[in-house]
Every structure is written in structure tokens, then in C-alpha cells.
Amino acid sequence: MILKNHILRLATLGLLFYTTMALADIKKTYYIDPVKGIDTNNGTSLETPFKTIEGAKLSIRNVKDKVKGDIMVYLRGGNYNLDKTISFNQTDGAADGYKIIFKAYAEEKPIITSEVVLTNWVIHDTQKSIYKCKLPSNINTRQLYVDNGRALRARSKDTLENATYDSIGHTTTATYMAQWKNIEDLEMVYKEKFTNPRCGVKSIQLKDSRAVITMKQPGWLYCRSKGITRAGYPWYIENSYELLDTEGEWYLDKTGVIDGNPYTIYYKPFNNKPINKSVITIPLLEKLIVLEGENEDNKIQNLVFEGITFKGTTWMRPSSEFGHSDAQNSVIRQLGREFIIDGAAVTLRNANAIFFERCRFVQLGGAGINMYSGCQDNLIQGCYFRNISASGIQIGDYLGFKIPTSKNFLQLQNPKLLLRNNDVKNNYLDSCGVDYRSANAISASIVQDMDILHNEIVNMPYGGIHIGWGWVLFSSSSAKNNNIKFNRIENILTDLDDCAGIYNLGPQGSETEISRIDSNYVKTSNDHALYFDEGSSWFIADNNVFENIKSVNINISTKDKHDLIVTNTFADDKTFWNKGTRVRVDPIIVAIDGKWPAPALEIMQKAGLQEQYKSIK
Figure 1 (cartoon, rainbow, N blue to C red):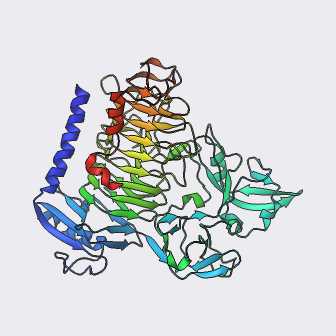
Figure 2 (cartoon, rainbow, N blue to C red):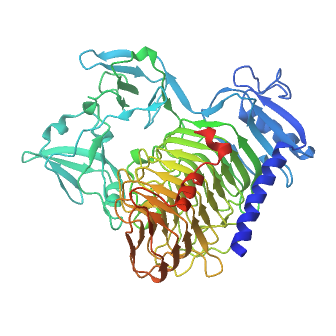
Figure 3 (spheres, one colour):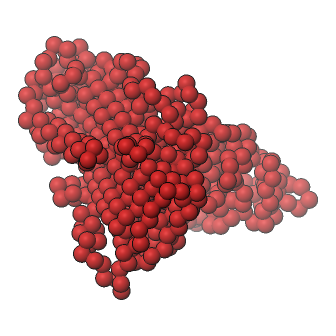
């Protein structure tokens, strides 16, 4: 009854908030127009708008404490081109009881982006149909977009020929690689069970009719020393001009060794479209907006972003000597030190009551949204995430999770730092984890009172929803009272394995603080639907539907998992593993010849976006 009341309370509060927002007593209104605006305007009318969000932010900062009501900031349509990240701090939020609302004007489409359009393309190699474009400045990026589609960095079609690997790197019979230009641009990409590490090449030398490839350090050490999986034979090779042989591929030459002009992009377009008919862009920034309070006692709060598109970022760390040594869930592991990708279009830290409503997150080189410690009562609702290199939504970091003094400690008790009541509802997430494939669409570390409801997740190389951390290192954690309900998850685990549509790691709650997984629909031809991994405890999973699962529907495979209840499961086969302690798994209700029982059909129908949000797709 306590848990039921908690869910009803959150649902009621969410409805009341948006009803209140729609009917709010707006005391001040501003306008921003990226085309006609001037930041020296007063911004108070359509005729005198600000030009930039930064300009509006600074003006509002000076008047907000005098305004006893909500402040509405309308963003006119068009591109808000950034050359540096917009930072909001505790002085930019609203007082308790009020909000500052950044909202798309009417039906217009404001786009916050760091993308630059490349126009001065000329032919470089007629025979190979390769074009080139000199960049306007010394821009470094890992992404190129053509007509809003992601172009591929030039890559090999298969693995390294006759390869070996050791603590230094690789050897191969592909001796021709020693003659390639810009050797230090090369990356080896690996596919190791549930991870997708990357590491750069330092040098290639010839020895005894073989090429000796020395990898960059310490990245190679990290990729080789991260637990169950470690880099071995490359899956493919990436980022060399010599690999530019397929339509839709590109390469950035920073040195100018190819034609004498440094920072030149080379691109091989698709034959059916002339290059001058395409819109080709590259992103400049790793982050578009950062919302960060000074500390847990002085937070940023009460901001709303509605109807805004966040588009065009990169993330350069994998190009460094550190590479990308992922553990799982795209968490970076460096000799036991674990942390998330610090590259997201929007970052929150020490932030309360920040709301994202019907926003779009597209063409991103890192994650969509990251929340760090001290984030509470935030909401991501009705948002669209697509073509994202890492996770769509990541709530919480893992850095120092074993250290009692850490803000991310697994058993954290500081009520101001806890990740509490950060809800994710009615979002559509498609094709996240494009570059860093071990990413999940929605991830949450040690969270409390979190609702993950009515989301739709499709086309993921790894898992759908990932919650928890810590394995069996602790018998309990601060995670509790979380609800994963009415989500629709399809076509996942297309590249990696050992995950699920819904996956938990480590303990949750207690007998009176149980987390729930209810009324979800998972359909995929790969691996598992529901996976309680090491240390999982105190969950009830009820009324879930699993279809076409390749391995087993429910994975509870070791005795360290305890106090789990799985009831009323519908599936098209009866397979599951259960070796846990104090675990109840009721027999699976099996669909016969594709004929699902009426309760299963009702769950399928209700899972995913609610009617009022179906138009966001």
C-alpha cells in the first residue's frame, strides 16, 4: 500500500505541475530571435527580442528576484549556433514556487546547436569520387552529418589480417599499413561480449615480414585490464584516409599531409546525390547546456525547457591517449576507477526541479542528458532521442561508488546529494549507442523514488533500461522505491550481448522499500528480456510480456540474487533461469501459436507512449 500510494502521489504531482504550468500567472515575458534579435534590446516584445539565450539569461538574472511570478522566455524558430557551452548556475534559477520557462514560440522550432555547415566542397580524387573541404578553423571532431544522417568515419570492412595481441599492441601480416599517412589517427575498435572498447595506434613498424602495431598508452593498458572483457582481436579499423573507399565515409586530416592543407575533411558521397545538393555539418562542442548549482546547499532550481531541439555535439576523449575502455553500460573503467562519459548535450549537477518537456535530442556525439550528484525532483518527459553516440539518458555517476566519502557512494545517506525522484516518462529513444555500443538507452545508477514510465526504446546495440551498480560488494545500497512500468522495448542487443530489455545490477531497497518492474513489453530476437544480475535484491516484477527472446526470458542465474518475486509473466516460450536465494518465479504463461491471452494483449497495448505523446515520434 505504501508503494501504491507513492506511485499515485508522483502521478498526481506530475499532472498538477503541468496543469499549473499551463495556467501559470506569468509575470514577465521575454523573446529571443536568433535572426532578428539584438542582445542590447530589452527582449520584452516580438519587435525587440534578444538574439541569444546567453543574453536573455543575463538580463533575467538581474530582474528575476523582483518578479513575484513565473517568467516566460519564448524562443523563436531557427538555429541558436553556439561556439561555447551555455552555463546556468544557482543565480539563474527561480525562487521556490516560481519557474523560469524557456519555451518554443507557437509552433516554431528553435534548435540549440554547435554544428557548422560546410559548403566549400571541391573534388579531390575524380576516380574515387572523393571530395574535400577546408575547415574554417582548426576544428577537431568525431562526427560528420549529411542531410541529418550520420556519415561513417572511414573504416575497414573486416578485422586485422592474421593478427596477434599482447601488452604492447598487435602484429599483423598487413604490412602495407606501415605506409599509411597519419598513423596516430588510427583507432582499433573491438567487440568483446558486452563491451565495445576503442584504442588509438601510436606507431606501426615492420619486423620480420610483419607489421608491429604499438598502441597508445595508457589507453591500451586500460582496455586490456578492465575485468571480464578486454580488448583482443580488433573488430574493425577506423579513421584513416586509406580506408576511405565506401560511399558515405569521411576522414579529417589535421596535419595536411594528404594535400598540404591541414584540417581538411575528405568525404565520399553517395552517387545518387550531388554533393552540392546535400547539407553537410560538423559539431564543435561537447556540451550545449550545463545546469549546475554551486554545491548541494546552493542548487540551481525551477527551470523548464519545452519544445527545444538540442542538436550537434561531439566528444573527443576517445581520440586521446586514454581511448575508450568501457566496462558495461558504457561506463569507463580505468584500473578499477569507474565513471560515465562526461559529454552530454545537457548536463545537470546539484539541480532541483529542472523539467524537459517535448524536447528533441538528435545527432549527438556523446550522451543526451547526464545527471550527476545532488539532482532531485527533475523530470524528462515527452522527449525524443535519436542518433546518439552514447546513452540517451544517464542518471548518476559511478565514480568512487566504493568510497564512503564519495558523492556517488553506493550507500550514500546525505539527503541533499541523493539522486531522488528524477523521473523519465513518455520518451522515445531510437538508435542510441551508435559509437559507444555498450550504452543503454536509459541508465540509472544508485537512485531513489525514480519512475521510468511509458518510454519507448528501439534499435539498440546493447540494452534498453539499465539500473543499479555494485555487484555483490555491498549487501545493501541507497537505491530504493524505483518503478519501471509500461515501457515498450524492441530490437535491442543487435551488436553486443549479456544484457536485457530491463537489467539490474546490485541491491535495491529492503523489504519495505521494494522496487517494481511492472507491465512492460520487451520484444527482441536477442539475449534476455529481464535480467537480475549479481547482487540483485528486493524487486517485484509483475505482469510483463516478453516476445521472441533468443536466450531466456528471465535471468536469475546465481545464488547471490535474493528476495525477488516474478509473477504473471507472459511469453511465447517458458524458458528462464532461477538459482537465486529467496526467489519466487511463477510459471510463465505461454502464448500458444502466437495467440496471446487477453491480459497480455492489454499490456502490449498500454506499453509505450501514452496517447498524448505518440505524436513526438
